[in-house]
Image (cartoon, rainbow over all chains, first blue to last red):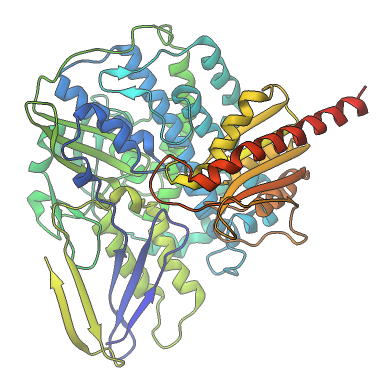
Length: 474
Length: 158
């Protein structure tokens, strides 16, 4: 049985490959997404003081260090058993929104807009941000400017754009000043204009992607994310909620510390990426998706005027009001960016946003802490246990890309069956396989952490594809 | 707005790869901030293009692995004649970044790369001995370049 391999997958964060197994007739038999890099932060933090964890965890990723900083600090808040000051929570939310904006801008403009603007079958040499620049300079400038704005929010609060400190167990390390607040407020109108312009462009061009919409991981799965009591879009805190493909709530009000009752973590022999699944349905049937698409399916409103209008239109894409095609992750990302810009202004204009009381102090009062939040790519959970001296004994990170692993694999198979013809390989079909992965915006640097042991399998195939030998450990 | 930008790039946790950061930090100590904008970053990303397009002179400070450890290379760079076709936008080289500035904003400054051959790129915050001994000379030289550029501007606009 011949195997086709696409390696590396381009325009994603990290290193991965796709393999497709063909049958004797050259038709697609199976397809897989493999992650070929390993990080292992869960092991290297063992024995470190828990107070070091936020700064250490932020180093996992250069794109979403703020997400790890927040999830880690929230886990530490639970270890301290403190309720952080209200202003500190708002400031953490502001930095998280800056992160959502810069990360979504990176995904949409830098990584996916070449496919969306130039076409999935366009010349691969031009299918990059420079190709976008030639075809639509305004869009290229918008992408750079919007990402710059999100990074600027992070830098203004945390002192630097990548790997900021500032968010700490118990709150944040220093209050916001009026000068810094006004600096961010001054840039908001331009950011809003860019998002509005991009949303208009995207909606106008949707029609040409009918085939991709129909075949890009478009199937019923569960969706998971944080939920607010009023069903508005939750990005910083909330209970975990699972809904099915019809929108029915199947598990709700789940406290972060109980995540392992609902989320199972499986190791696959051909990938360093954990595959999580909804435990009551088992592995691999318990497929669910997280991230922008899941979040917009989970909520009934965003909570800001323009984003609410866009959400209502988005939900009209399907008669059931449940949007199942993963192609629409792009659309959802733009709506969330719009929400983030609007919400930033609301938070920055809160009367207590310059309050000086931004941190609660305590020693360790619990041996276990779980922190959960919504990273740009989906729900992020940090779970720590400590000993009596406050040193980390175990750490488990459950990361958005891992939640989406099973759905990405199913999506690759769906696209392969639709587009790949083993007799004649064409560039467009190969790029579609990459593009379905890109729609999820996976971050492999974030998500390749061991459970303590890592399954690895080496497969030896003869020239005709015959399986000759395997060597593995589990 | 400052007319000169110094960009020190590399990984400050990888010994000599942090040379750009160290040189930038030392320059900041001796040059008034209003004249020069200092940027320290791990890699050159497209987001720098706008700032670069607004400057008259940009100095990139880097470490490399060609030559004898501690050797200093200093050369002018410009935007490529043809529009760039690189596929990797995670990090760019100075030429590609200048090309991006020209394509996006229609302006490209005079630019200079100053690079020192590294000896050690392993984990660590310290520069190796040959690279550390090159640092004062590089800082002095760049301070002179920046001073002359500022003086020329003052004379032109006097």
